[in-house]
Length: 420
Ligand code: NAD
Image (cartoon, rainbow, N blue to C red):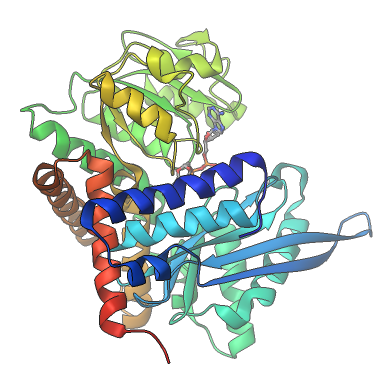
């Protein structure tokens, strides 16, 4: 797999090392390992796009499908300046494990466009999204590969994507993408799904200790789609959100931040920085704030060997994908800091995406209550399976979750056998 930046190559190596570890624990059949260690399909596309200035610029787009064994593939679209094939390859593999752990009938995928949405006009974003959708059209579709939002994309981009794909096939095809606006067949609850899922998994974990979110002191890195919902939901349950950061800065208040007021501030000013209801702290000091629960909800590779010795929480809940490096994992384990892994904790988004895909096929809309309840129950079931496997296999929860996922996909690969 061609490399991106050194960080991306590292991320890809981490993804492979995670598979190696799970394979060793469950004694995975070598044939199954061979089929899972490399992505099945990777597409790189060049997107000539007319900018507002009249200039024609080539953007690079990617789509990686990790395994085609489990059904269609599923995974988000990232519009970030540092996107690479290696980054997509690693994240596609993570998606395979996430879907398998949550018992969703999908393999993993990831893709997007290397660009900086902050520097692009609405028209430029639309032209990039549409050209990207058209270029990857041969390998996507409701029964092939179903994209969804991720960093730098949201409902707006999914609407353009849906429209472009529907034009290509000659009829409206709502099941070709998830995370659409509700007016276009999007599902109630998709926007909040990942953050809400994080909270459901945290609640299930606390319950086993006889605790509830109320009274827990929580620090949250990132105040975007995921972090802002985690903050709001935990605040509503009586937790004290003691610190929040985003790319622009961080704020802390040991007695708890007024989260609705913070959300209002961010809507107006674009960042948590400068919020008058809490003290300013260094952005990266957020991770080292004294708290019960630390929720990384920004990007990968945030908790590292450098800062893990200084964390002052008792539980890390991984809302982001891949926020903890393997070296940091080992340090946290040594320090007795528990961790709810991303593959479980951040699974709410893809679970509700699955509900949206099902509704698209059924042409029948579920209620918000149905979605919330099904999400809660699927995530709690997955959490129970992980806790049980962790005990049975004598491994941490990340490894246990991966073992369950790898075993499931490996078994499916074996049953389908090798073609031809
Ligand atoms: P987003 O772009 O809406 O929000 C990201 C937030 O992180 C922003 O507030 C940004 O300012 C902040 N941030 C970025 N770099 C930071 C840094 N160095 N320090 C502090 N804050 C920083 O993205 P999102 O959709 O909320 O996704 C966040 C993470 O969750 C990503 O890892 C994503 O892959 C993962 N995730 C998202 C979903 C989803 O449904 N949106 C699902 C599963 C996993």
